[in-house]
Length: 414
Image 1 (cartoon, rainbow, N blue to C red):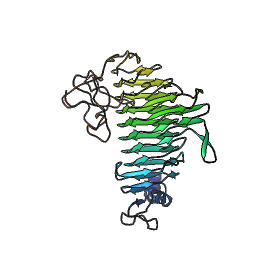
Image 2: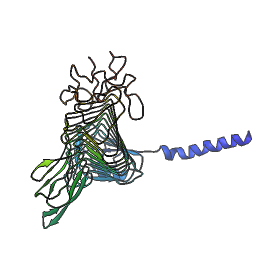
Image 3: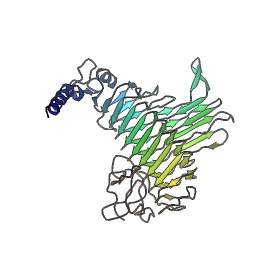
Image 4: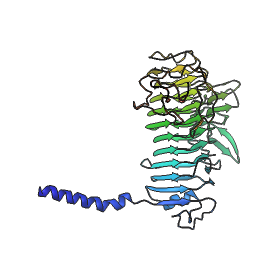
């Protein structure tokens, strides 16, 4: 008993000796309108002027609160930080079209970016964000970023452009979790006048161990190169995202308006929305619709459940495994599990805001996707029930005791 008591007291003493260090963290404040980098930056009334300066003051585990303003900055994070904006519509980090906006360089860094817009970045790998660590992106927008084909300059002109461009919006080589966010209008690829040229992942290029996308919208992203001659410039692939490996999960999300193309006399492309080059992709209760040059292209392992793939040229290419209750507007997916429907129109509305922080595509009256999900409940890739749709509305809706709807949108009245 004496030894147990001694051990207990030693553990208590050790806890209190370590607690101040483990729990200590500082909140730093930034205000692009009223701040000064000569301030102490430790209160809303004495904020920094720039995010970059606050990062230089912070230590791992700190939080940086960023007030509404447009910040024309590019910065690198080598430590674990939480950067919290005042709202994606008002707190904007603009890369100025010169390089990556946010780079997470340390593989051990855990970074949260919340309530921000990241735009107008330009880099061969990851125009908006280049992540090597663990990144959680919430309630944010990544838009209007580019990953151009590399260029060799003579004097001030680009004489030769050839090589690979990856991840117009985000390049991920670590772990990436995206929730309640919008990835839109990003592009990988550019004019090409040499051989070969390749463009992968207009919205996101993933070669990391993990990527999870939840309750989010990937809209009008594109990958492709415009060629000056009939040279063998490779087709752009993965307008919304291209995954090179690892585990990718898409839950309660919408992928639309994405494209992949090449122009050298004629235009074409592959995998307008999602390309799984290798690894594992799981699509759960999501809507992949209205993409050009194809919906889902798989050469790894791709599993779908309770999802809609429609109006995207050939909706599926490669072998797609169905876990049941999927709908395709053509026969290319060859769904053959319980509750699956092929060559069936989902009867969808137009993309807009119907509640929640991200735009969605509604199910219209008479849609065969209504109440056609798994009657045991719609689940994510880990087998957990999805109790809300992309907007945060109840799933199934209150009038239904059983099956949820297919896709990302749960119609609240039938």
